[in-house]
Length: 415
Image (tube, rainbow, N blue to C red; front, top):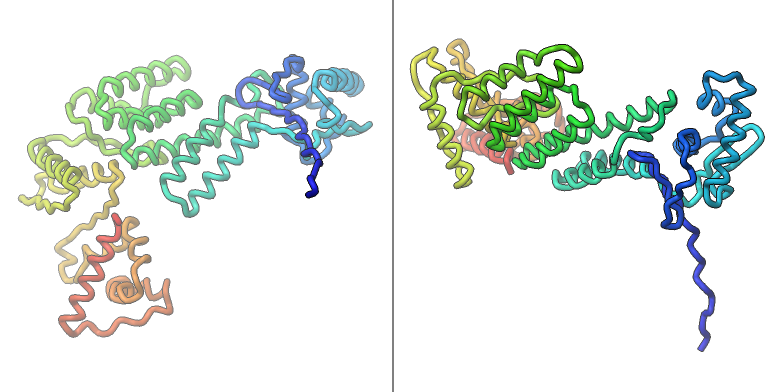
């Protein structure tokens, strides 16, 4: 019996380069400490980040020594390159050195934490195109965890500033998406943690302070929300010599003067939304909150009818309830009825069905039900020209089918 005595091909040592946060290079699991000057680190970082093409020596010399004449800058580059080749293990595997150009070998066996971060962001975008919220959340968490600090913070060269800012903006956007997603899932503790992280990276964004205050109130931490306001006011005064905006002050005063821990919150992107306290009607508001809690606990639908003469605040109560439901990640739809429109059949139902909350649910229905809804939403026949046209509505069974189609659309919203 023949035996294959061939030895497996040995794996080449991997060079690990970290530029996010502290500069760090590891070769074959051992830290490389000899690349210990800011200039060497800047040159290596530039070559790694621009490895897709050879870099002209003249260009590199100008980037690193913009205040020196060309001759002196090129001499400085030659000396720096000599030091880098001595400090970098197995340098010829990673550096392609020519008379006029330098290039980091793009096919060399190495890893870069900036690449890992950007790949993780790409995975988030892929998940957003059709993945579940849990997958999006998982990929956002991974991407954020890979950002261990700003790009090479010890480097003050002009070339790195746009790239550093670009990556920081990507992080801030990812944190915002995570906060919004966690809030919709009622995970206020984690949403607060990410909001606090966002303020570390962008401490002068006043809208984030307001959002954090709302999250803390939703998490029954009124004291924490009030402390967040004080932090915001102190920082704005010290850094910008300004006071918090009227929106922020209004939210602070509401927190000071109310014992309710439930606020109407906008989405993360709309941090400038007005927060208008509900004045009066505390008894009625309490009854609505009690009914709401029953819906949540029992997972059953409830119908609440708010009645009374004009001008006593019925609409305001309803708007507050819609705001609360939106905060909890519940799809909402609103409609109004006016005396002048009393001749328009199904007017409130049409408004509901055209709302953002219902549009996707309508589109997901079977063709037979979409055809029925086209009686009320004729634009469906334009969007779906192949749909059968609805028959004239002359028999009771047809009216029943229309009612069932509307019910199916509304029920499908939260399924």
